Image (cartoon, rainbow, N blue to C red; front, side):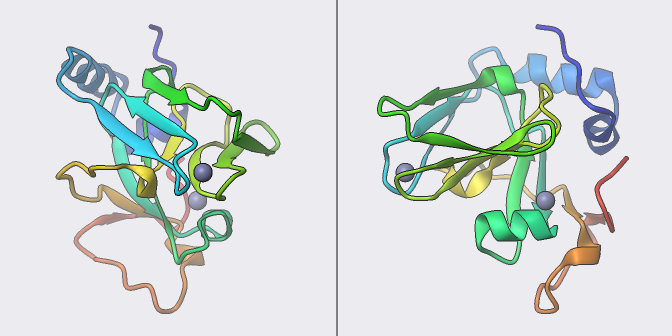
Length: 161
Ligand SMILES: [Zn+2]
Ligand SMILES: [Zn+2]
């Protein structure tokens, strides 16, 4: 596939070749992540790894997740297969992309704010979370007062540009 990440995703991950390396490394059947919403009507599989795992403290992610921050990961969108037999996946439309959730239970599944090839998976939905550390905190400028940010992690006041 043609990889065409947004500048923001490149900035987060490092470079185009880093994205392609990670992608090639993980599409040889090594990784298979599975997820589901709360009610179980929506399930998914992801056949490549989480490219960039981050806590997002922005106002939108806080409202969408109902929590102090959303834990998201940039993923290769074409490697995400959603199984939704009763068409519960619902889009909250944004200017360019959207935020996708289950209309049966409200669980956030993924967001694609720029409509590009690298959506953000909402990682609370992963069934068996992989052994991985957070790569960064985003939008620390909008975090809740009670959220303590680990200063050893890469942190951005907004989103990387
Ligand atoms: Zn559901
Ligand atoms: Zn956010």
